[in-house]
Length: 248
Image (cartoon, rainbow, N blue to C red; front, side, top):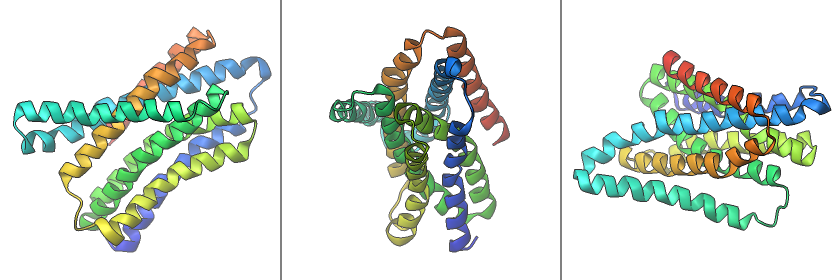
């Protein structure tokens, strides 16, 4: 695959995040807003934890186990994952000035998913350069789970600010991290990125996403006391993760 084509497929995969953001244009009745937010948050929780547990963490373990003794590998995994957990706590503290927890949640989701999309952009670009079918497969799989990630960003910000522009802008910024990763891979990193470095990045991002889902998103979703929609959202997210792995 040519460099241009590899960059294009990486960009399209990233921009698929905007498709998830389109959900804010649905005409939700006032009485159903809490149910809708609960469903979207629960759906996003399942997506973030599911991606981390079934994709990011397993993908990172092989190269770490191959590079260190078993004991050192365990320490490295826990330390790298722990840095991701700490990052969420630090970001949360820095954002205490925002009283609206939905807005804060949307921004934190955006930052977490930007970090997630960046190495994905690198992986898609480099994979596409070396193997056309691999690049396309990666791009389709990434686009498939970027759509619910767009929901995780857009819905909290929209219902906190009542601004579709702000919600879509945040979703766009997250998606742009993917072609940015591809561009940097082409300009500076193509000859320096190692599988081990990518493994560290994936573990770090997994720590961020799992912590964000459990510490921030779940309490907010539970707060609305819409347990039926909480359950439906979680089950829907789990179904999407399973479908994603079944198809790709």
